[in-house]
Image (cartoon, rainbow, N blue to C red; front, side):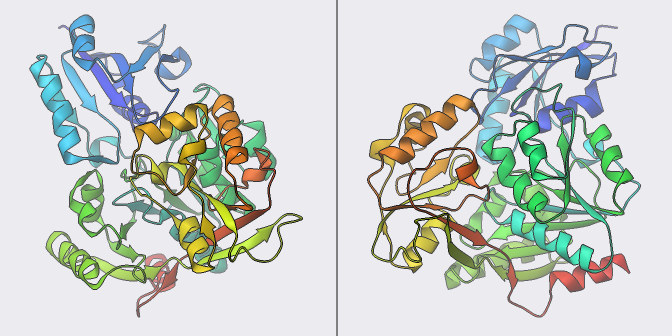
Length: 442
């Protein structure tokens, strides 16, 4: 019987996981290519034979998503599997239409096909959109679990942007591990705050191996989701974060709506900044899609602190450049983040970085025209880090406000007084995350 020829569309994360758990050892299928989108510099690589298994002795090519129709024809693909997140439902169906017009079937793989089963209790933290506030919820859960005498560990959704074989299964216990494994800014933004707080973080490409590592050193696992994807590990408690500032997005983006419908607990974040109409819209959405879910309204209070010598104690009245989390601004679609909010709260004058952008950073602004007042912390390669540093130095300002969770001064020479913005989660109703976790453990 002829093997089905498959192209997997991805962005360096879900695509590889779906291959590993569904296709890798299936002789009835041949994955002939991955395609790459969303993330710069991840096309034109190979998924290595060490990861792809005995059926793929030469590995599998990873090609740019552009030209999908030609690829289907050239590689004689029978099926296209869509495997990345934080895109509109409309975008998914455009990709389906292109694949089907070329004669191929189009598939989406769901939770039951792709979730691994753990020997430990698992709490997942996912979202309806990138930038909703998953990270502070994850941190708070780990702190709660530790305070209750547990040994929690975080398994982070993959960011497989570099050497895939080296990234097969990663363990981050101390800050030096981030340097040793040559993490990008985007990886550091997720790992660094947790490691700095004393928690173990696991990530990689082969999540069966990642899960085994985490199970050996923990008694509760917290799945730290990426973008708005659903978990790779089957959760016993599903917590999903919705953004009160983007009330309609829960039903517009894939697979965020899947998360919303599956959630046991929905954290509605940023309620302090949302309009009354926005809050009503979120409540209506939750009531219609998942009326049995518990709801916890929260705020993400921001705090701005001096960082390093010469920064002074205040930026009131000063001209500042605001650097924000990259993915939140790019495929997350936000025009600003905690940094701009903090700068405006203290009366700083925000300088737009757009006219001063250099190299690949300028290309990022061209690709995302909604960005104007803030600088996305893009660092997917050494060259892009250099462009980021050159852009920061070119902006005429008195200080730099860094709202990315990573200590940016460890990666680039900012060369100006620097202030860091921190933010957390604060419950605004009678139900708390602590009560939810205690009930879950009981």
